[in-house]
Length: 314
Ligand code: UDP
Ligand code: MG
Image (cartoon, rainbow, N blue to C red; front, side, top):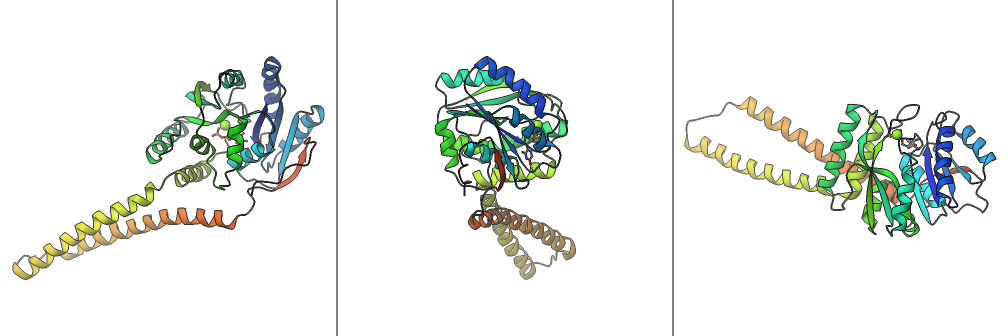
């Protein structure tokens, strides 16, 4: 079994995480490797990881050349994992290591993907909980792929699923969506998401928005279809209005006072056009990114991987 853990400025949690994981792993008693991906941390994360790696051969470390982001860090871990099952979890102990036992139980029952559903979230701000709830529900309405509600990346995947993911070369990765898209027998297990053990969230609003847009643009064309629909409606209304105005001008004495109506039409239409252009831009920017085909991530060094590491996913 492999466990993939992305870490970004998590120096304070690494030791506790390791000891909590060890308890569980000793109970399960299957061969394992822990793959930590250091996603360009600016604190002592790498130092802490290397201390562990020195003591324990099954702790492996991938050190990125800079911060590439959470989803890419997970991807690198998956690319390097060799286990017959792979668990993805956060470093901050919000994903309880104890749940891995349940994952394994369900996996042995024949499920290829076992994902953790957040029945309750502790110690997160009201704002975070609300935006997360809204996000998962919007995603479900927007996409045709059935992405489970309130489910993060904390999950176990069988080897065939991991291989399927590695064959997907998308750059703007929304992993939980890709796994849902891949199919295979899947099951959710509920859990209570704990508080972050130490440090602060590494997902400020800006990253959350980017993450949400990546999710939506990679799984739905709906926003583009809205543009068509809204454009269509406005065009019909405009056409009817034009007929009415010309009729009134030619055949009646009523004249409409102009400024207000013109300004309203101008501002509403102008705003709407910019919004639609923005939506187009979100898609086009991502297309450009995909087309350039730069590597997904760059690795500075790997530790404790005996064999030569496979080349990064292009
Ligand atoms: N993370 C990462 N790179 C980033 C941001 C986050 O590797 O650019 C890692 C982070 O160290 C943690 C996991 O992704 O292990 C989830 O981040 P966090 O707990 O801050 O997110 P939240 O739980 O607040 O949504
Ligand atoms: Mg967290």
